[in-house]
Amino acid sequence: MAKKLTVVISQGQSKNPRQRSLEEEIAARLVIAGQVEVSLVPHLYDMGADHTGLLFLRGVPGPLVVLSWIYPRAARWVLDRQGVKGREGVSLLRGEDEEFDPESLPEPTGIGSVAPPSRRLYCIDLRVAQSADEVLQEIDRIAREQSEQVVELMSWIGGDPQPQQLERYLAQPAAEPNSLPILPTPQDSEPPKRRWYPVIDYDRCTNCMECIDFCLFGVYGVDTLDRILVEAQDNCKKGCPACSRVCPENAIMFPQHKTPAIAGADGEVAGLKIDLTQLFGGGGEKDALEMAIAERDAELVNDGREAVGASVGIPKRQAGAASRPKDELDDLMDGLDALEF
Ligand code: SF4
Ligand code: SF4
Image (tube, rainbow, N blue to C red; front, side, top):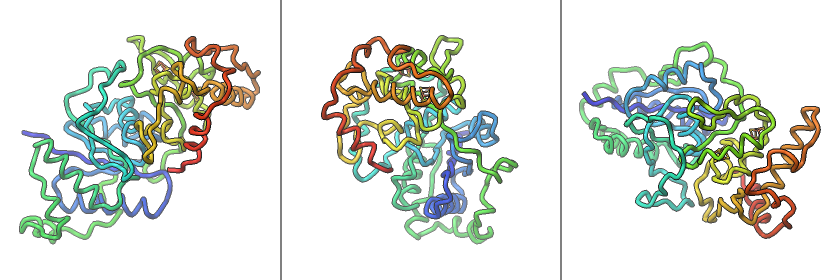
């Protein structure tokens, strides 16, 4: 028998009433429609590996839709690293200013995920949703795309429920936030602490190891297949995005960073094409390396250690770039830093 679509809502970190109300409306309407499994978990990025929310996510057998407040690329790889794997499902719910053509997605050039199952994993960024209706329509489209079941959400959205839907609706109490299927775990009463660590996009990562050489805080390691991994997440220094600037593939994301390109946005933001190769090194013109070195030195000094400047762990392909004069791409980077999303 076909497996039912599961929708998991990853709650925002803040108590922003707009965020909470969108999460609750989506959950309530999905529960009432009764066509998909629905669960709420804390913020994806903050859950530790043994959190019950992640244990639940690992146990979902079929196609999975995860709604969260970070970029889909970041959400997908946070999940993959926590053992919640699947082949990438493409969400068509995008920001108004985001140009997106599902027919011309770039081919992955990295080492990829290890043995992902064939089921699809869809990640949707709730920040781009103007209303719960938009999200429900996209979930309905995904459910139909999956051909797993007939989903009747559209009739609810359009205010025209089927008789059996109405019967089911009248038979159950109104959905209160507390009656939603929040996972029964003591940790849920206390949201997990906010965390800060790099997330690698393995569709881009070429396993060049430049990040492990650059970071002097023991964050990176290698797995049994000699693939780079973020081994000690909590060794990373809060607010430091230095290694994302030295990765030649822009494969390192910090989902909470204010700069969209570092937080996991694809190549275009607010109508502005970003040449990521140039912005983040790779032999490009922007001296991202200089920024990375300054950020790393600041963290070393905060730790009571000596600043090392460009004397340690400088990626070979960027050596010599540190003293290049600033150019117009600095202005572009400054502009991006000023964007708040
Ligand atoms: S620097 Fe980037 S591409 Fe190279 S191993 Fe690290 S994450 Fe992968
Ligand atoms: S952001 Fe800084 S501390 Fe964190 S992994 Fe990268 S270089 Fe290391």
